[in-house]
Amino acid sequence: MRVIGPNDPLPVERPRRIAVAGAPAAGKTTLARRLCELLGVPFVEFESFYHAPGWTVRPTWQQDVLEFLERPEWAIEWQGEEVREQMTARTQVLVWLDHPRLLTTVRVVVRTVVRRLGGGTAIAGGNSESPLRTFFTDPGHIVKESWRRHPVLRARVRRTIAENRHPHLVVVRLRGQRQVDAWLRGLFAEVS
Image 1: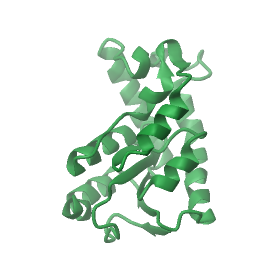
Image 2: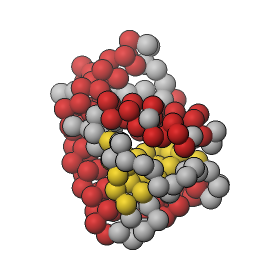
Image 3: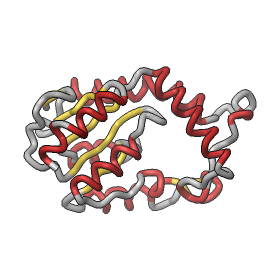
Image 4: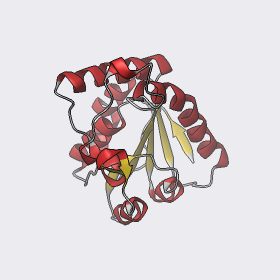
């Protein structure tokens, strides 16, 4: 396994299977979608596999994700504890959006407000996030979840690196949006 930064050469000539890791609002979906556009590979938002209406869980989500991962090329968010190991085994490049906790928290607040101003923009399963005003009454509010999950996700990626069970895997660690933008403009643009 190799861990590289935004300015290091990508040791995969043309990646075909990319997962994007990060806390809520780190930009996983946006980056995965952008990578698909650049590489011309299929994109399906991870949450569309998982969420059904009313924030229920789709009963076939694991099977659906694993079927998607059998394709020869894709980019997807590195989520789903039950399928993460299989996803990692198939991934060539794991892009780790290791943004500061404050940045992801500010982003999730802004995203929540913007979605609510847009009329409660529907996300996977036709669901919408709780309004920001419910922060104090909703124990699972997305802003709280983002704050809680940030160190958990960081530890999970670090554990994956330390365990080194996937020697083929290249981890690209990007800290902050400037590094993401530089990576997309620079070295990654050369391989896409």
